[in-house]
Image (tube, rainbow, N blue to C red; front, side, top):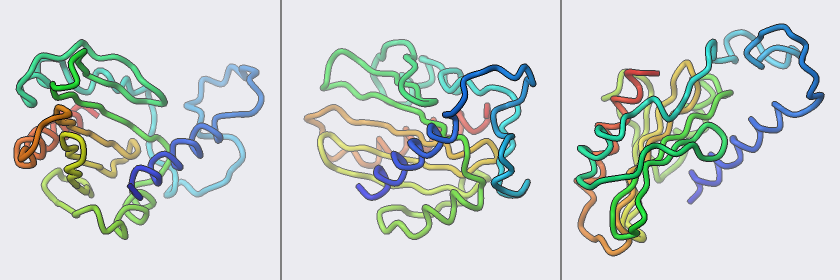
Length: 180
């Protein structure tokens, strides 16, 4: 729960940082410049726009979770969902929080007792599993592009699915990282 609150708080901060005058300066920048509030080492490389819904394909999601899903649907603040109309079926969501540097991301996550650090993705990353309401396997990776989170959700009545959901989240996180 603490992780969800942390991620939500970081999303709010990132959105707040994007606020202000809506006038277009025509500079063509990526939205990170402006008030000089950090050093180059604190600012991730976010050159180019990342379409979170293009980090995975529907076929990849279906193969990993074992059921059909709807095509990718953009969700709030750099998020994308591959869901179903049936709450008994598994679903996947991907979130990209642009703003924290890799070091800031690691620092924010390494103290969370619900997360386990892993080195399997080639970038600092953390995993977790929450058995509530069908299960939720989570991979959070700290990248140069920001904080990438991949969540594999179990169907609401599922139990005993931790290994399958963790495997799906790991597989999909690697595929998303390969495209990031």
